[in-house]
Length: 227
Image (cartoon, rainbow, N blue to C red; front, side, top):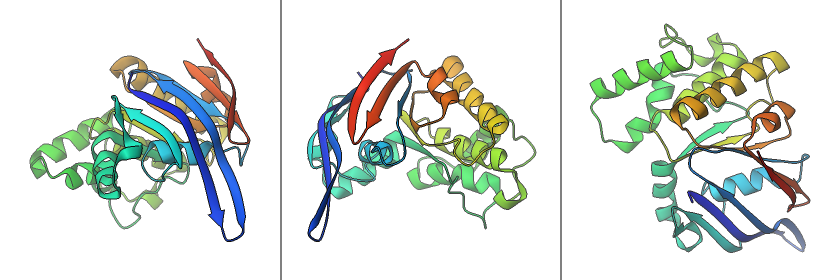
């Protein structure tokens, strides 16, 4: 099992007010799955994704990645886990506007500091071709459409071949036609290259294509199904 979340709880403490965001969450993701958890705004989807991706910390429970419990790791160790194992796709793209498309995509490889610039350049060109953006490498994000920017974000998430892609509402800022094309791109990468995806979403297009779907409401998983 690639990922297992067991009895995960998360409460936010803000002065005298406490807000329980996650309550006894249990889920699993196998390598090569196209998994989603769906629910309305405020249901805990993003909090759950952030806890899995080491962007936030749960309060109790376990998050096992390849059998290693991330809940036992120190903050500096979690930064290393995040850098080595996860790729992120956000609804707001989170691209650097002053950098070119190629520079945005190469960023994860530059941070790993394991390859020469020549090797990085070759990987970036191949990845941009995969997401349909050959010839766009010297443009900047604001010169692209929203759908194209999200394709750049997909390329950036995939470039280091992470164990798991975490996608937080990746179609939320796209019109339905553009959103569908981005979802189809990710599904193709899942089917043809075995890329593992975990989504938080309320988009029916994503839910329809998910191989496993968890329904989350008020911080609790209410139902699940697997195709």
